[in-house]
Length: 79
Image 1 (cartoon, rainbow, N blue to C red):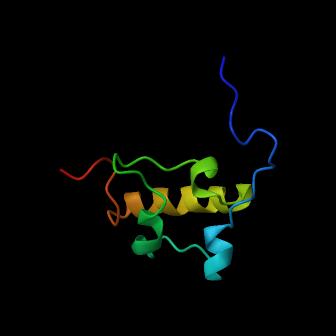
Image 2 (image 1 turned 180 degrees about the vertical axis):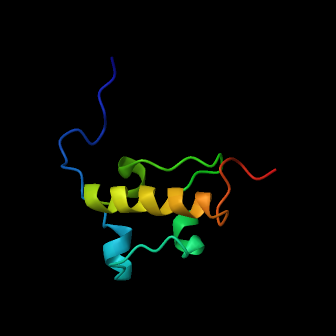
Image 3 (image 1 turned 120 degrees about the horizontal axis):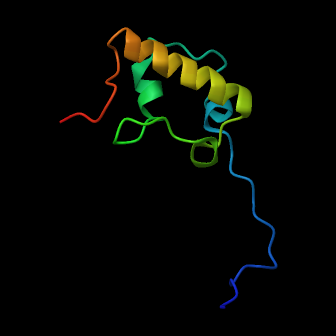
């Protein structure tokens, strides 16, 4: 099995996009922000992909679900 090239180098942590933008409150009406955390298939992206904290991921998921319920965001992919 081949070894990775950068196996000896520690991974540099990527910045949290919400903290970098100074966003402290996640509102379900802010659909432009919420769309950044939804895949093209309409699924909520994971923490590993979005680089948000566990608490922010819970708040994002709840806001996305509320926005879907209020018909601000689609449940599935846009056709």
